[in-house]
Amino acid sequence: MNKQQVANLLGLAQRAGRIISGEELVVKAIQEGKAKLVFLAHDAAPNLSKKINDKSHYYQVDVSTVFSTLELSSAIGKARKVLAITDAGFTKKMRSIMQ
Image 1 (tube, one colour):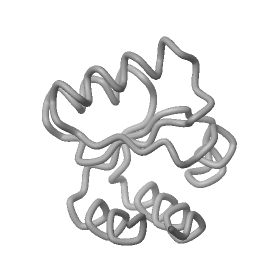
Image 2 (cartoon, rainbow, N blue to C red):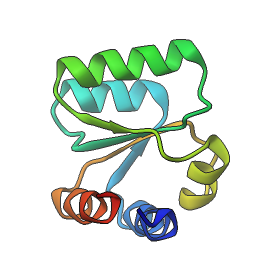
Image 3 (cartoon, rainbow, N blue to C red):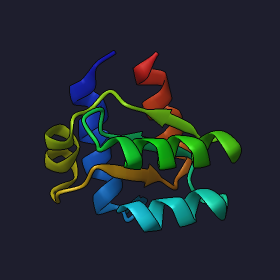
Image 4 (tube, helix red, strand yellow):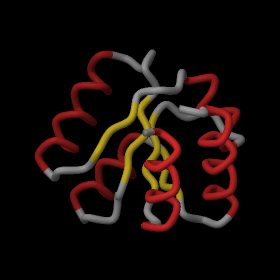
């Protein structure tokens, strides 16, 4: 898996307005079926990780924990521990790179 390619795509998706970031907004997006793929920092707090993983599992949304908080934040240009991709095209491309 090429993490740099995925990080570049995250930046592109951010500029295209296809990313929802922040804990509450991501949970809402998962519940509303808008989130296609969720990125959770592997060094996020345990309670945040549990909340996101439980919601994602219930609503059958994939969660990726390949990035640290620093990597996620630098990819999208703002400090975030969790973000959701809302675009099917970006999600498909990221999944193909991550395999």
